Image 1 (cartoon, helix red, strand yellow):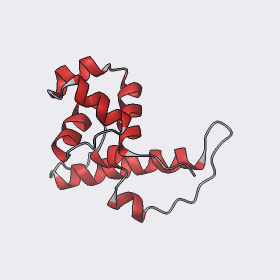
Image 2 (image 1 turned 45 degrees about the vertical axis):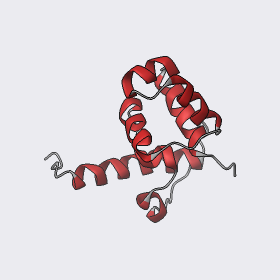
Image 3 (image 1 turned 60 degrees about the vertical axis):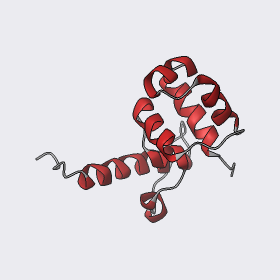
Image 4 (image 1 turned 90 degrees about the vertical axis):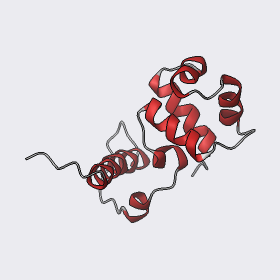
Length: 112
């Protein structure tokens, strides 16, 4: 199993969103040089920066930090198909469970 750092997660989320560091600077107000240092692991991201990045990149704080109360409670009994991996299945499941928990915390009702 590969250890993934917060800096790796931030870089991968930015790349997956198809956003350059310059564009992310405009959306978050975080200087591009600072973003570069965060992504390289030379400087840890502060929580307010992680919050801004999660909004701009369309992901959760848990996805960027790798720390999730939901993920720690997830037990997955599934079989990954030929095109995927069990880690991918768990990541996808965790994303939706975290989103559901977030919406519940915000008082947003489930659709009927």
